[in-house]
Length: 347
Image 1 (tube, rainbow, N blue to C red):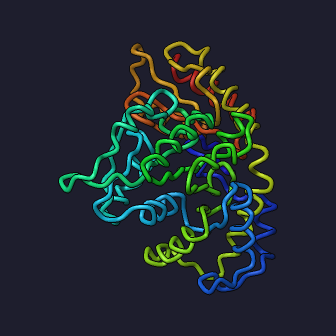
Image 2: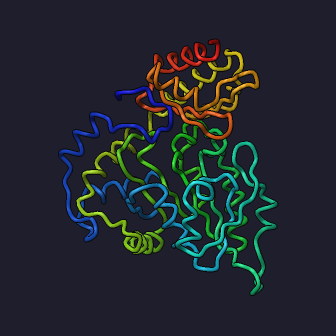
């Protein structure tokens, strides 16, 4: 890459192998179901996640929205964590386009809703109330420093959902980061949910796309809903070819990104006037906060990093920054950010 960019793992460029595969990909019209590379990607994703079928979509947000629209109807209610990406960062799509009301519940420091509260939030059959229809989950939890949530939580959610005839969707944008950190197979988690959306264009480095998986009737409806949203793509195998490498190869190397994130957290923790807890860094995200003695604003720090050092980081909220490691971040880039922060904070 031509800059050191920690803002997100969405900034990743496709790898050289991806570019080669994209140029050579067999293609067809995917709306007609005739693109062999897209079909191969959908099949591989479904197999990896233990589901019957998959659907290639343009983004993780589109995959999540399609899932909500397929599982719920207008007037239904979705139970969701108050810091979940689907609630906070997807433009209110389920409510705006689907008439589905989110019911946000507080989460703990790794993004889990309290199971007893989830159970208590399920509404009875009363015409005054929206109908409880689905539970929305996330792993890893981007609003909680990329925390990896263990399978037992999803087992508990599944038990509640089955007892009340609800569906469960998993926003698995960074699911492979979570399972890498936990040391478990993705199916240890996905067996407890009805549908999963995985993002290919974050730490997995594909330039575009996500895959939504579930049972065959769900994916049949999802394909219709994708068309409704204008998401039907034609010779999409050019993109899907990169997705195959993302699933086959890039999902196996995410531990390297986690090591770089820990390296960064440990280094930043040594600097005065910064607050960061390396013990909270499980995956590829490092959140750190300015101390009270710092007179520079967050915006000034971001500007100095970019102008003077060629480094970009993101402001998460208030005085808190987020740095995300990925394939294109190397150990010397981590060291450069630590040194730049040290220089800026001591001037």
